[in-house]
Image (cartoon, rainbow, N blue to C red; front, side):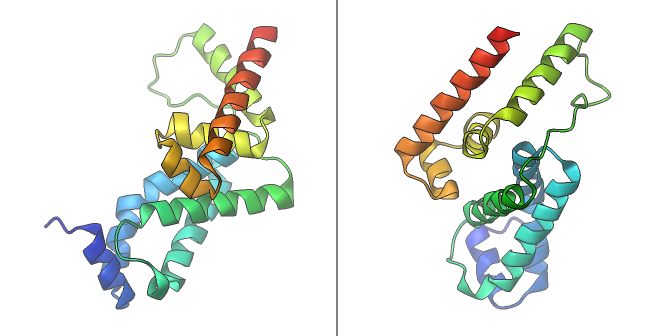
Length: 171
């Protein structure tokens, strides 16, 4: 029984818990992945995910009809930035992507180097890099999520790529 998201949002606005559950199941991995890639901590990403869905429930009456994921990702990135302001730094956990990975030792070293350099990027650059390159959002979608002009998104992405390239070439 495929139900479009606009209908789920409409049902959510009428306090239907089943609609909330369906939206949660549809978007929880994307919200978690976004928070994790920005913060680098599974524990913090889970907290941010819970906060985002809590806000979805508490703000359900004021939601616009249609896709809710852009709203959730905006709440998620704002929550990540709030954590950053309070804690100053969240290093990415230095573990390999999965136990079943066929990553050879050289790739594993390169992976850890990239994680270390991602940790050193300014938060806006890291967020733009995460949304644009790692999650595949367009400039327009990234700008809407981060509440920034598209030119700023392009600039931050360029700077992030240049910073990573420079740092990795120095090694």
